[in-house]
Every structure is written in C-alpha cells, then in structure tokens.
Image 1 (cartoon, rainbow, N blue to C red):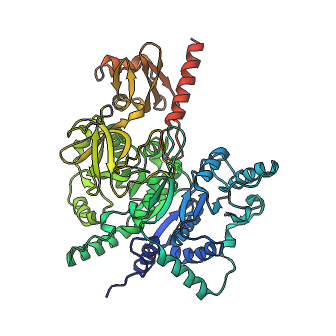
Image 2: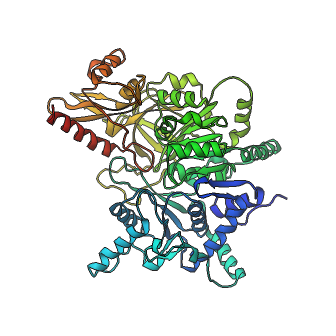
Image 3: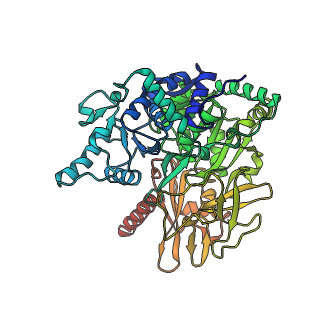
Amino acid sequence: MAWRSEYQPNTVPAMLEQRARECPNAVAYVFPEWGQRQTWRDIWEEVKPLAYGLRRLGVRRGDKVALLMTGRMEMIVAMYAAACLGAILAPLNAYSRKEELAGYLAESSPALLLLGSEGHKQHYPAMVAELFGEFEARGQSLPAWLPARERVFVIGNNGDDRAGFRSFGMLFEGGGSLEEEHEAFRQACLLVRSSDPLVLLFTSGTLGSPKGVLRTTSSFLTSSTRGAPSGGWLSSVMAKMSVKIMQRFNMLNLLPLYHMGGFATILTTLGSAPVCTIMLSRFNPALALEAAEKERCRVLVGTPYMLQGIIAVPNRSRYDLSSLIGVAFTSAAVNPSIIQKVTGELKLRFFLVSYGSSEAGAVASGTCLMGGGFVLPMLFRMLKHTKLLGGLIPYERFMHENFSLAGKVDRSIEIRIEDPATGRALPLGEQGEILIRSHRVMRYIRDEAERPCHQQDGWYRSGDLGALDEHNQLTIAGRMHRIISRGGEKISPVEIENAILRIRDVEDVMVLGIPDDLYGEQICACIVPKQGAKLSADRLRAELAPYLSAFKLPKETIFLSALPMSGTGKVSVAEMKRLALEELGSLRRHA
C-alpha cells in the first residue's frame, strides 16, 4: 500500500513531507550567490526545528509572519515553517522604503517580523529601528501593527548588523523535550487546511499604492493536485516517469518571493513536480547569466522585461547558455516582438506564456514548441498531467496577433468580456474588459468601497482589455487605465508599442497619454534605444507611418536609458508618467 501523509492533502506540511519521502536527495532550491543548495530532505529537517521555535513564541494558526529580506534559503525555510503551523505569510517588497514598510506592516499587522540584514542599498534592521524610534521619541505606545522588539529577528550573527534586534538563530534554541516539541508541531500541522489563508501578497502597485490580497493554498494548485480522480495504472506510471524526468530539469526563477509569480512557482513545484529551482537574491541580468551558465539551467522564468534585460547584457556572448531550451513569460502581457527577440537571441526550443494576477491567480496559459523533431512533443505529452505546461499553441498564432496572446483559459475559470461603457456581455472576438470568476479569485483585505472590482456574484473586474476566441484562447490588449483618449478616439498604447518595437534600433518602449488642452490627451512614446543607435522623433514617425493611422502617431517622444521598474519586474506606470512629464517640461523650457 502506498504511503500517505496523515496531514490534510494539498497543504504545505503534507506536500513537504511527501517530497522528503519520495525524492529526499533531489536538490530542491539553489541560491548560488550564498552558496546555498538544499535537498527536499534538508528542507523538511530544517523546517521542523524552526517551526518549534515559532510555536514557542506563540505563533498560531491565522497569525501573520512578515518577512523583509532579499532572496535566500532562510526565507523559504521560514515561510514553510510558518505555513506548517497554519500561520499566514506576508513576504514584503525588498525594495521598500521606511514609509512603504510602515504601510505594509499597518496592512498586515504581523505577530512576528523576520528581517535580512541588508539589501537593495538599505539596511532593513536600521530602517525598522527608526520606526520604533519615531514612536518612542514622541512618548507614544507602539501601534498594534508593529510587533514588539523581542518579536523582530534578524538573519546575521553580528550584533551591530542587527540594530539591537534578536538573532534569527535564537528561534532554533531552547524548548522542551524533542518528543514534546515534535508532537506539538504534528498537532498544529493536523489542523492546517488547503482552504486556509496561506499568504498575504501585495499587488505590484504600478499605479501607486499596493493592495493586500489573501490567498489560500488551494488557490495556487491545479486541478491535478486538488485530488482529481486517478486515471488508472497508465496515469500512475506516467506520473512516476514525469517525476523522474522533472528531477533532471532545473529552472532559474528570476521572480522575487514577494511577487505572485515567484511565490506561485515555488508552491506549484512543491505540489506538481519536483523541479530544482535556482534563485537570485535580487534580479540582476549579469548575475542571472552567471547562474544560468553555472547551474546549466534548462528554463528561465521571469517577466518579459526581465528576459529582455538578460538578452541586452553587452557581453552576453561570453556566457555558455547551451543548456537553455525554454523560457516562461509571466506576470505581464508579452507581445510578438519580445517573443521573437528573446527566443531568437537565446536559440530556444519552446516558450510558455501565462496570464494572471495577485487577485485572480492563474487564469490562462499556453505552450509553443519550436523546431522539428519528436522529442519535445513526446516530453510535452508525458508532462501534461503536471499542469505545469499550458495547452499547445502554434507559433504562427502568436506572431499573427497585434496584441498579446495569453494562452488558453484554464478549465476551472469562467471568463466574461464586457463592454466597459454599458456592462453588456460581448460576443467572441470583440474586445472589452476581462471579468474572471473561479475558486482562485481572492479579495483584498481592505476592499475599495468607492470603486469595487469584486462583484457580489463572484466576478472580478480585472481592469484589463481583451478578447476571447472560439478556442477559449484569451488575448490581452492592455490595461484600461492606460487607454489614451485623444479627441474622442480611444487608442490602445499596446498597439503603438508593438509597432515601435518593430523598429530595429529600439530596445524598449512605453507609450503614455499625457494631458493636452486641445485633445484631452496626446500620445507620448518613451523609448530606450539600442546601445549606439541614433534615433530621432522624426525618424520614428517616418518608420511608423506605414503601420499606424496618423492620429496614432506619437506627438511627443522622449529617449531614456532605461524604463523605471517596480520591485516586481514590471514597468512602474506612475513613475514613468512622472518622468515623462518632467522630461517634457524640461525640453519645453529649454526649447
């Protein structure tokens, strides 16, 4: 009789225990910068004593444990340990400044705060100490959302680096007998359910303030890992073979663990297939290339902007990337130009696209196999049951799109395309706002009463424009808030961006609507030229003229060295608008 965990299925303790038993010596996670490499058995054996320590501090089911640190093994172990107790994880943006951190803490009210010593040009313990100091200097008691000093722990043995807070290592010390500790841990694990809140994720905040979304464990899992009935002995054999195959794969996950895609990647591999995951402390294109070469990575996972950053590294040719066979574009719409550029430069055999959000979870995905042969199609069929790969879509289908093909909508997801002006449901092929309904849709911990996007009947208003075709494939045309209204004409910036990216000397672009007294808004193209290229606004308009109507041609053009990124690997729209208006104001003053 096959072994089965006593813990509830599809919970973190059950999945971790299963991994430790079924593939104990398979490497689970690697952080090359820290020299950290751990197997599934290593992780399970480290999770238990850390969970004992968290429990001794009073961490219980439903409490929140906040983590502010750059990527490292201790973060993964701490998240798993807290999750085994039924606590809610709150990984915070590692780029946070003091005011932003205060906002995250006020939203999450953590029972415990775990810090790295430093990262992204800031010292996290000193920043938290400043927050304490501001209240103490005013003689005020600490707010309920700020945990007491003795409940803040810092990774690092140097007392000066910890700014007076306790060492992370102290969580492993003390306690009663090992048998008593383990039995208390076991009892806590038995109470955990897959429907419990698992993680508080904050939206990327590309428009301004991030919002917190509570996600359950089950909202990350595919139908195959949520207890779907067995397909008999053949399915069982295929499943065992796919596990063996996946143990030989490894992927470089460029997404941070406070990002929906980054967190979902580690949880999906925990539940679906034991792929070795290589991660960085932070995204850096050169470090990513080093890791891909050193670890002989097979797949890269990241946002389109991250993957573009990698192929733009000037000395990329000196890295041996012959092990790479595919990429997974996540978290943002990816247009045909970027797909061509990334897959061509890296000489890839396949790519994946996906569409989802912190609020809606995974919605649609698709896989494209490129080149001849029978090995990849055969491998795809073997691994299909893991649900790590989306449905097959021909390469030509991606290239014929003016917008971004997000893949096939998952079977468990309902999609409605709605006219933003009238609320009328639109037929197949027509473009409107995408509404989503499924078990994966989660609410904000503080819903906006003025502009609710979660409807009473379960539909979530995504704020994205798109269309659905007869094959249940979803196309993304851009964000509604980015639609430019010029003299009554509604213009999609994505269409203009795709046309601009066809120009040989353009590395990257974002198109914005800027205020205009006559037309309401005018089109502004913010362009990153390729290194050494000589681009001008006149040349740009001349090369775009055959592809765009006259009213869609950019009125203003500014050239930048890079587009401003948020900590989640997306372009910050709010920061981009600020930079564009400042740059245009400066150009006009000196004209």
